[in-house]
Image (cartoon, rainbow, N blue to C red; front, side, top):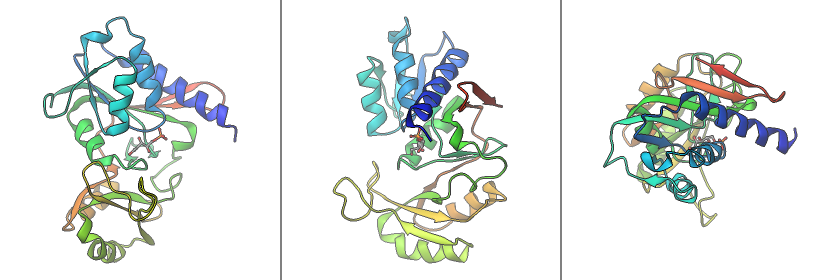
Length: 236
Ligand code: 5RP
């Protein structure tokens, strides 16, 4: 698989998503995290009216993206009604359910997504599941947790049917668990193919110590996929 092809697919999806969806009237725009959203910020930075809207980041990386592309930076505390948000995904199923959190930003990503009137996903062709979640993305569902609950939650996730549960390691210091922007830990729980993501999300969310899950259900408006052949597919 050529890196250039994947990179081009990300860029095509992001540019098309912005070109087809960004409303002239938008005043507040959510910016997700990851390597595909880089191209969303780049495209927004090319707009003539780029000083006419404020961008809400979903983490440290997206804050930097906003600044680097000359966009105006706001915060979710200041603007809790967002006109449109763009974000990447680790996997998208045919019903527009997502797995997110591969980049450890899932809590703020979900906060921004649910505050947005439109939530547009941008991804390359590797992220598109032919049916359910858990087929393309096999590293498990990312789950943000309060640190001292990890042992109990690990047991609980096995009880819920997880095949493999891992406390994500390799934070900025590379030793020890990843620490999120909210000073929490992340668990990756592999449930195989996920038949009912709403039910699984609800079951996990009820465990004491769980802050949020990377299952995004009933949130996405549209998904743009950069394809291997250079085209862009849209799922609505
Ligand atoms: C971070 C995310 C990212 O949006 C997701 O991992 C996709 O990233 P990329 O565009 O690099 O494939 O959920 O928490």
